[in-house]
Image (cartoon, rainbow, N blue to C red; front, top):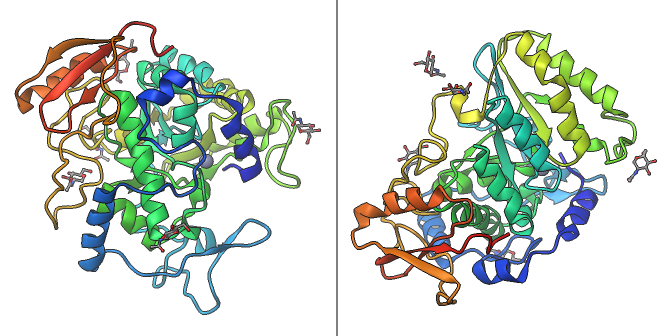
Length: 397
Ligand SMILES: *[C@@H]1O[C@H](CO)[C@@H](O)[C@H](O)[C@H]1NC(C)=O
Ligand SMILES: *[C@@H]1O[C@H](CO)[C@@H](O)[C@H](O)[C@H]1NC(C)=O
Ligand SMILES: *[C@@H]1O[C@H](CO)[C@@H](O)[C@H](O)[C@H]1NC(C)=O
Ligand SMILES: *[C@@H]1O[C@H](CO)[C@@H](O)[C@H](O)[C@H]1NC(C)=O
Ligand SMILES: *[C@@H]1O[C@H](CO)[C@@H](O)[C@H](O)[C@H]1NC(C)=O
Ligand SMILES: [Zn+2]
């Protein structure tokens, strides 16, 4: 978990390059709270709402101490709004436990300058993990995002601006989720995420329903919380009376998990926020393996695909899956298959046209081919004649 003040610092710490801004001109500005959603996501939301799939709850408010709360009389438990923050209530489809003997490895809040050391370690260990990324951090650190993919990180959604989601209205929730999905899609060569984790774990059945009915996202919680985000870069604590006070405290906490019972398995909450939180995982990983845990990224715990349109990274991308098309109760909108990543800017001389692809069936191959290059970028025409462009090497660096 992460305190808003800490996040604000992170969000403003890295400037996006002007080149990058041009390529992603359709994405919201970093840090925008509840960015305005695309009209097609709103249309799908309204159809789902009309079909009775999304409940009408009052938004929570944030107390002075930073806890979401509802008006008096609201049932926060499983027969009511089912708030995780107020009542530790999980939704029926939420993931929070791993199968017996298994350890779900996940990190929140990247991609950040502290992340590459983690990616290198995981890759060296041949260890996959799920990384719940903040859209704002993706646009601020596109190179780190590409390093994550190149190291075979599994990528999930952690919202655009890291709000308490239950405090937002439905439109803002659409924007927080949709634009993060869009950023991951645009920078990965077309992957559409399938899993999300709410900041602070904060969700209720209204938030869950919007994520599921519009974006087909499955919520991933946790059953162990390291509070590793409390440690600042100097190894001191920003959490006052709770959480680890030192790197030793953090490592002792992580070691205590793996010597405990194996049923249910563990899904730990850890962060790629600072070198200290990364170091906690790295320094205790050998013990985790020694105790016989079968450690995997979240979908691999359950034999699920990593993305809505691809089995894992580097596999063919299934055509016909679009962002925010909703569950099957209504037809997909006309803008279909792949959203153009940049509708307003025409290809410049620095873009090298490699292969105009005529048949829709060929899209996945083209994407597959292009996604394998760390410096590649895709642009599709809005009129379903997809054009694949590869940036000259180094252009995005
Ligand atoms: C890495 O893990 C995968 C999946 O478990 C396995 O197929 C592969 O052989 C491993 N590679 C190495 C170098 O250990
Ligand atoms: C949600 O809040 C935003 C920002 O205040 C506002 O622009 C939008 O109209 C609201 N949407 C609804 C459905 O109330
Ligand atoms: C880190 O935390 C310690 C203990 O709370 C504090 O004294 C120190 O100023 C903090 N350092 C930074 C860089 O925030
Ligand atoms: C995943 O597949 C393996 C091998 O087929 C099987 O042993 C395991 O029970 C499956 N796990 C789940 C959660 O379905
Ligand atoms: C939603 O995702 C599941 C996989 O998680 C997939 O089987 C299903 O077809 C998707 N539904 C739609 C309408 O895309
Ligand atoms: Zn977070």
